[in-house]
Length: 435
Image 1 (cartoon, rainbow, N blue to C red):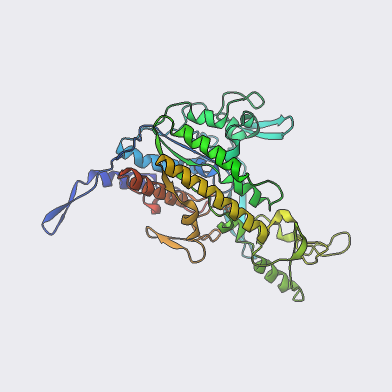
Image 2: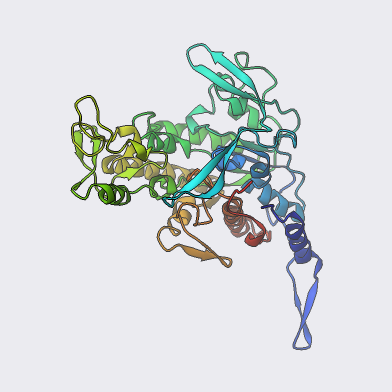
């Protein structure tokens, strides 16, 4: 499926071009896009994979084209905004890092995800002492307004070594891995800008959560506040205005709500009706899993029931529980929520002190849980594959999801700065990757 680029452009042009329409013998004025008290001449966007347009477990050209900052910039251009160059992969290497596409349903009803491994933008691997191997992507040279770097955390923005250990950031720098010393914060703010969006901080909670609370740590609350303060201070130092986004509650995304304890147990019972419980490993020891414990989407269910050296079935006996790396247990869920609440208090407080617009992504995404909510004629839920909002990795958004987020950014920007940027038509964006 291809995005309807022409339709999207025509829609935007019609909004601007139609000056008035007849109604009951009179005319009704159509609002012309304006910037209000903001200046969209050079708009930049800081953030991580969500900002870069990452989707379906990869960064690739069509995802980049439909990043939410690019969609916002398209509307800003109608109100005097400038060009918005992104570090796009070339057409010849359009599949970038590689990704997964939807290949229908298996006999058991689970989605078949097909890895895409051709036309990649990978140039090699570098061994970084003290860190390990780093995948290197084809270098991008040219102007950049979208500074989204997959994997980056707020706590990474001042690390001078970061351009050596994150291949997505290394791709944007002139030097090769092992030789870079430019920090992300300096890199993104060197060229003057007039307006910005910022959605850094997601990975400071997400990394801990997706590793089941064992492969990463939550950024300490005081550190988050210190880094966010320095970031916002630098972004606003020259008078630029902008919009920031809060950190979503990671427990609401499909990555944690698709392979439920009850669903796994039900499948086990089809084969062995005598099984009564799943067992998980926690910091306090093994115990029976409950509905409050979240199994990660990439958990290999084929492990269930496989005996260990003591002939104890995996996940079905306290002596061979599901490993912690596959479970965000209920205590870890509460821990993540506590930190996210603190992070968001910091974000809102600093934004308020600087007069910035705030997109409360945390509250926005919560409303799609369960039956979901209809937005501009499209019903979104947090259901995996069918919910339209989240891509095939269960974490990142679909093009339609990114368009919905762009519209929310536009809404809060308009409210804060009295601008009149039009929203985009969500129907012009796809939600499932078939090719």
